[in-house]
Structures are given as C-alpha cells and as structure tokens.
Image (cartoon, rainbow over all chains, first blue to last red; front, top):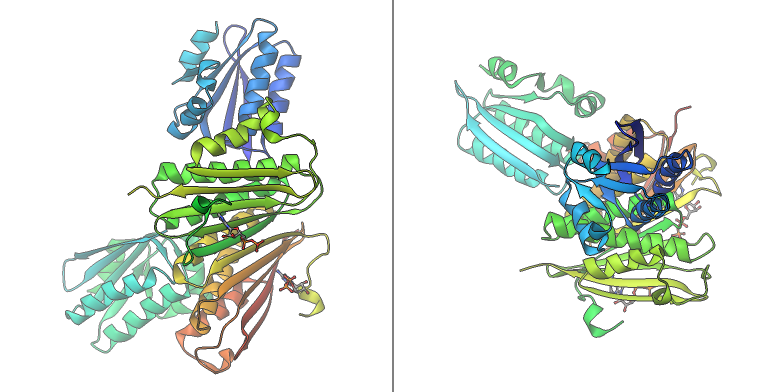
Length: 114
Length: 114
Length: 138
Length: 138
Ligand SMILES: Nc1ncnc2c1ncn2[C@@H]1O[C@H](COP(=O)(O)OP(=O)(O)O)[C@@H](O)[C@H]1O
Ligand SMILES: Nc1ncnc2c1ncn2[C@@H]1O[C@H](COP(=O)(O)OP(=O)(O)O)[C@@H](O)[C@H]1O
C-alpha cells in the first residue's frame, strides 16, 4: 500500500527513478518530491522505471506530466519503462503515449535518453 | 476468492485431498462435499493437504473435524499437511493440533497414514 | 439519475464510508476490487472499476473542503455493477469541473473512459456526486 | 459498551455494510485487511483482525435469519483498531451462544483468542452485536 523510490545515476547525464508499489493520491506527492529534487539539481534526462508499479492513477500521471514539462524547458526528456498492460492502457486512453517515450526495458529507455 | 479441490489416490488405502485457495463460510460446503463423497465410498484414510491454502476459518475447521469424527468410527484417520504459520497458529489456539496429525510434507502425512 | 443508471431492485448492496483523506483511498480500492470479483468481470474490467472508483474518491477529496466522509454505494446483480460515490462539502474551486483543462480533469476523463455509464455533478455547497455503471459482458 | 472498548473521539471511521450472505464475507475480509494495514500492525496482527472480523460476519450469518445486511464499523487511531459488527434479525436458535458446545462456537472462541477485547451479545429479536479491539503494540 506504499511506494518505494530508488534513484540511481546512469551512464551519460541520465538518472533512473525506479518506483515500486502503487502510485495514487496518497503516494504520488512522494514521487513528485523525488523527481523535483533531481530536476532542482540539474538532472534533465530521466528514465522512470514503472516495471514494479502495480497501479497508477491520474495523480501519478500528473506527476509524470509535471516532470516532463519541467525538463523540457531545458531540452531534457522523460522516458518511461513499462510492461504492465493495464498501465500501458491508461497511457493509451489518455493519449500520454504520444508525449512520453515508453520502452519495454530500462536499457532501451536509457539508450533513447542519450 | 474461491477454493480448488484436487482429489487423488495415494499408495495404500489413503486418498489425498489437496485444497488451494481460501476456506471460509462460502467455500467450506464444497470441501465438506468432497470429503463426504470419499468417506461414502469407503475411504477412511485421508491426507488433507493445506499447503496452498492461504486462509481457513472456523467453518473450515468444522469440516475437518466432521470428517475426522466420521472416519474414526471406522478406525480411520485424517492427517493434515500444513506449513503456513498463521494456519498452524489457528490449530494451536483451538487445541486441534492435539486431535489431528499435522505434518510438514505430504510424504510424511502419507507415511503416518499407513 | 436517468433510467439507465438505475440499479436492479433485487441487487445486492454494499456500502462503504471512508474518511475524505488521501490515505484511505486504498481501502476503497481494495473493497471495490473484492466486490467486482464477485461478478463475472474479467480481470481487466475489475481493474477498470478499481481505477474508476479510486479516481472518483480522489476527485471528491481534491474538490470538496472539510473533513466529510466519502460514501460509496454499490449495487450489483449478475448483469451490472452500479457504484455511486458522494462527498459532502463546499467546493474548493467554485468552477464547473468540465471547464478546467488542468491535469485535475484527467481523473474524471478516466472514469468516463473506463466505465459504461457515468453521471457526474459537483454542487458548490453540496459536494460531489458520481454515479457509474459497468456492465458484465455476455 | 464498557469504557475500555470505547474508541478515541478523533479516530478515523470506516463503515462497511454487506449483504448477510456467505459469498460477501470475503469483501469484509479484504476491506478490514486494508483498514488494518493503515495502522502499524504486524502482518500477524492484520491476519488476526481479518479472521476475527470474518468470524463475526460468519456468526451473524449463521445465527440470525432473514436477509438483513451486516454492518461493520471501524474506528482507528495510532493506538488501536475498534471494530463493531452488527446484524439485525431473529435468532435461528433461541439459545445463549455461550451454552453451546458445538463447532459453531469455535468462531467466537477464535475472536476472543485473537482480539484484545471483545464484547458479544445475541438478542433473540434484535440480532447479533460484536464489538472488539486490537491494540497496536508499542
Ligand atoms: N451505485 C448506484 N448506482 C446508481 N444509482 C444508485 C446507486 N446507489 C444508489 N443509487 C440510486 O441513488 C438513489 C439514492 O440511493 P441511496 O444509496 O439509497 O442513497 P441515500 O440513502 O443517501 O438516499 C436511488 O435512486 C438509488 O437507486
Ligand atoms: N468499532 C467500534 N468499536 C467499539 N465501539 C464502537 C465502534 N463503533 C461504534 N462504537 C460505539 O458504539 C456506539 C454507536 O456507534 P455507531 O457506529 O455510531 O452506531 P449507530 O449509528 O448505529 O448508533 C457508540 O458509543 C460508539 O462509540
């Protein structure tokens, strides 16, 4: 019923934010804070790994959109790693699939970030 | 939210009733029926495998006790296979640990049935 | 409430009331998943209902001020699950929900996409009221 | 209700009402697990509360006739979870619950063993009423 956030530096200028658990109205402020801290430190290439996320709601999507808006001001990018069909479906329905890069593996997402 | 019941013949006169899922007020009548059918057919040595049971309540315990009472009339036995600490705890609290044979593996339960 | 969203008379009723706070939405999510599992929904449909109910709760928390409870009522029979989510309270922003183009609207957008029928109203003093239906595929 | 089982005034309240039918007990079980998970209970304590609430529902179904709902009310704060399970209806057997030595009693026996405080009453015409408390270990 909670979220785990693991931030790690990747080759290049990118950072990986690995999330596990459920991203909802209760937990998404913690995700927002973690992403915000990275951007404040000047990290504009983010790979957000959702492989271990079982659930995401509109507040979670909002946090991802907010992060994307901020890094874009600096020419950065947010790439997502996602395999879960229910979560992919939500990116489809909302049209967010067109504004995020969505990849099957962290490697692919990192390659696209460089 | 349901129960799966798998009945198989074992070496000797014993039968194994393998249960998986949750045994509660809704599903225990199905377990009672399966055990009852075996006893009606003259099977008095039963190994009830609870390894895949995640949950059991008093109605489930009642079904096991009822089965034991019936086979004892014919000099039979009911041996249980159980590793789950929460389920073991319930057999402890209720004192049922003293009236059932409770074993760590199906093999051990079958050996004790012969 | 139109005729279409009216549930069956002999339907089973489950009612849940949770505090109007973010940390309790997970309880509604688990409870509605359990209710939906009792119907012959596919796993995908159960996940749709779970998200829709969670979005309705989130919307109710974000829109209405005060500490009123969120009341969720479910009526189900073999053909459909009706869920109504209500929360009393004065609206935080006094504007029609459909007029916003912020991310805040994404929640109700998702509810409309995931459920078969949706009726949604926000009243400046009376709070939020969302009724929705998901039909069991035959 | 003695002083001891009285919940805290500022406690969060969750209320659940399910049909008084065997197939709905699983919904109560999942909902109470979710509520208990919000407190600082160990996994073992959560499973104790889950079984106790399920036993209370089972008892209410088996004792009271009719199709009344089962009403579950939970009040929780950081120190304890109070749960009260009630069902209206005429008793199927008109006897005191404590006087039976059948397996039927095992359910309430388990509730008493798993929870820290329990008050239980069965009224011939008014139905069952079980209030219980589990304290968070500090
Ligand atoms: N889940 C639901 N979906 C659609 N309509 C509902 C649902 N629950 C209740 N209703 C309808 O809403 C109205 C009032 O419902 P009810 O739950 O009894 O609320 P209240 O007790 O506050 O009046 C009734 O017309 C009922 O049929
Ligand atoms: N979970 C609980 N555990 C212990 N006492 C409770 C619990 N819920 C309610 N009570 C007590 O029971 C009484 C009535 O509770 P309430 O839920 O408001 O029922 P009602 O609305 O039917 O009167 C109050 O004294 C309240 O403090």
